[in-house]
Image 1 (tube, rainbow, N blue to C red):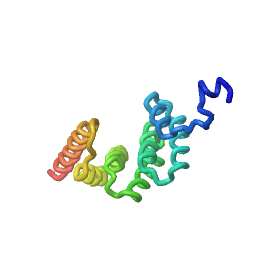
Image 2 (image 1 turned 45 degrees about the horizontal axis):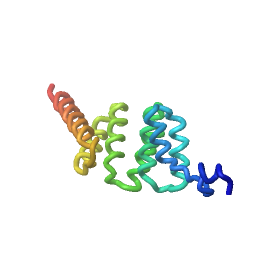
Image 3 (image 1 turned 135 degrees about the horizontal axis):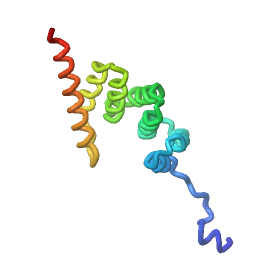
Image 4 (image 1 turned 30 degrees about the horizontal axis):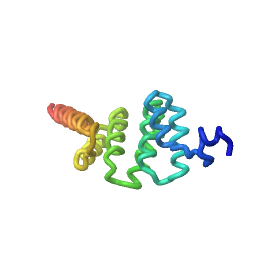
Length: 143
């Protein structure tokens, strides 16, 4: 084995973590490149809902709303209680002026909220948005 291989490579092919690569690309707004990495990650693990959710987020950021909606629904077909998919889907539905459908997804999200460092911010955002939706509905009921 050559010195270079010993120094730079153990001789075994380096396995690329396409999911992690996609996350890094997403952080620096390289959305199309991130989608490519997520697609490769999905090819390795076709049922990985974390990859699908990141794809939906990426589609949303590049304005491919229909693809994002389809991808979130695919996640929910595989795991109907997945909070991230309900959260993302709710805000896409709001953009389409489908407040009642969005409210349903926000309620489902809040009934099974995520945990973790960023969760509190998303939970508060969902509560505030649901409250605003309810307020608009109540204001619309008054004649």
